[in-house]
Image 1: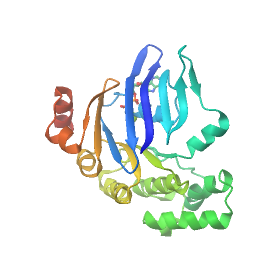
Image 2: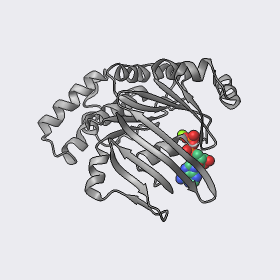
Image 3: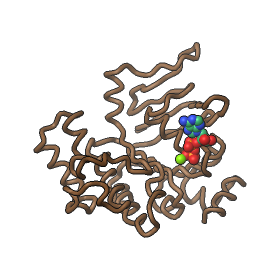
Image 4: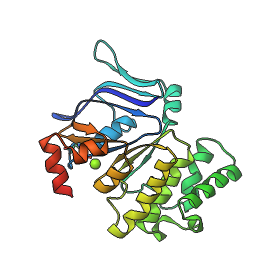
Length: 252
Ligand code: ADP
Ligand code: MG
């Protein structure tokens, strides 16, 4: 089943065409890795998929529900507020720079939306939050503040926070690129564990060996288009496109 369907997405910033007619489908339970040089439009694509950025044309469906479409006159129409609320519930997002609330403890960071958006009781929310912190291997950090944590711990808190809302698909935008190399492993491990549980994930990453290991499908983007895509075996070991080849050689 298609959890996310994006058709003919275009996005420009002034004269700069950043996303040039990209279409992609994400199937339930699959892990998709997006790779490509800096400035190729990876973050913008994720931001369009998660409605942090408006599109100029195209359509996006979550679980068959239309989030945005373009009518015959070229007008972009987003879903109405109540429908959008449902659609926001389908996905979670993990950023490169964690985006934790610095003045909230770890457990409050993880439970805040459960209490204030989903209107769960504090007891229930803390139950869910503690379970997730345990899963992330940071149960003992519940009362700590973000400034008291390592980068790897912060990122695991932000993954717990995204998971708390029980999304159907999780987006990661370079989840380890703000981390010291010795801390990337602990974050990649929790993402690998989620993949084993068949969590649907879309991961923008520079970690090629990780992408190779964890992804079902790899997308190589350059210049706002999907240049090449396929299984890790196809993209990494039987690369067809010269630009993909050059990129993989450069980052390895
Ligand atoms: P990537 O994540 O692959 O490095 P981005 O999606 O961040 O690429 O950026 C693609 C291009 O769009 C870059 O040239 C970047 O400067 C430009 N861009 C991204 N966001 C904005 C913005 N808000 N305003 C203007 N230009 C932007
Ligand atoms: Mg980026």
